[in-house]
Image 1 (cartoon, one colour):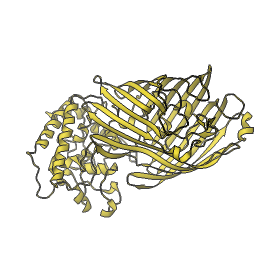
Image 2 (tube, rainbow, N blue to C red; image 1 turned 45 degrees about the horizontal axis):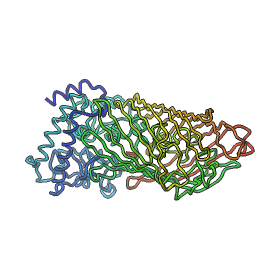
Image 3 (cartoon, one colour; image 1 turned 60 degrees about the horizontal axis):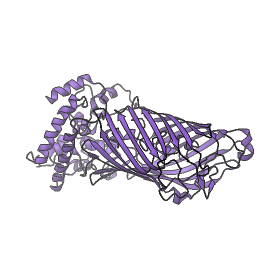
Image 4 (tube, one colour; image 1 turned 90 degrees about the horizontal axis):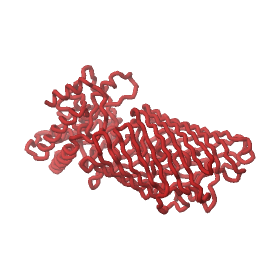
Length: 605
């Protein structure tokens, strides 16, 4: 029966809506995961694991799932040491940074050079599968019945036989056949979507269902393509707060394992910078930027509970005045407005809990609660946008586009309609963070916002939002701000693009900001550029008025080392400006800013 269903699904070979939660098999798959975990623990205690990979996402036991289920043992580690190769699941883990050995010690240059020896050849000598194990029997029963449901729901379109892959089934979606069919049409060197690691094993074992496939030329999908986020879509689609990015966005993240049933991950970066902002008002300074983000989430039946902590060491490294950034405005130091400087971010940038729950077959609701967090206003913050995150300097339109990304007290409720539409609304505190960067500011919930986001494809994310900010500026007490933000983000392969327009309305006057930014990033490094046009109405120590400022930034990063799941790079940037001639006496005629920096962050998944 399952074989017939799989043949029918393969014949149709049409795209499947990914993570269209909930599947009717969701509870069965959760139970199957628990049975598999228990069985792997039994094998581990019996000394029947000699694997080479770290625990798969959602697992507490190191080692591949495939060899456990098929063989009742695993010798991938021993075979790797002897140069014989590893199973497809282990190969995929190595390609995604989850290898558990030192390749140099076994004479292998890198993960790409590891040969594949299918799982059917990876059993330990004289060790047979314990077919009577109750956890194994129950797992097989649950995974088979679940796959039948997934196929009827058009969520399971696998590229290998023998019942198809378990890896994607446990994620409630398999589009490996669709991906492989599309990849076969692409030219050499063109980026491919890839298939899952267990399907790679099946291709090498001769179980492929698509003719003309060379297993040695099949790409493996990035691990993030199999990871569900806090509000129900791909984790790669979720940005800061409850924002969306294009679903094809890259992720620089390190999985820390499973603790108390929660899958824990780390994102972030740290930089050491030198900047000279140039011109008459420019300053030069060594400083550091940092953003450390820990995420923990677990599945509760069909629901998802997630916690997020994001912090910064900026207050310790940069003091109250932050770092030089010509024409930057917003916030204060020592009771005075910051003058051509970027304020440091708070020690606690986000402390949030998210709960999401399916409301119908294609609709998922979510609730986001944060004593410090980001309301539904604007696009993803600049540190979280792929088009912007390579740049070490904050944009001068920050307090238009994404200035509420650290707000005290945020309550957001919303719904996802598939992976295509998201509607969310927030209550939050309008006042910007005060000068004490080490505490949580008073919570008032005196402001509100709403946002609609449309992702027509996995390459695009479009959003429109409106917010009312009650009394946001300490130096302008009693002055409220209305804010409108429109954004378009695009991801295609290694290229990330972003366009953001925003308007602040106060005193009955409008001030606009527009930015166009782009980054091309690969394993070797990145090139980035950003153009900004901002109506600045808060410039310090110049005649009162609105000044139209243009800034163009160009730079790049060269990655020079990788170790322990982190990558290290060195970069530089240059910025040019144009502005009204009435500011020449204050800023000089043609100021030029430049900076150099050293960066460390998790490797790309």
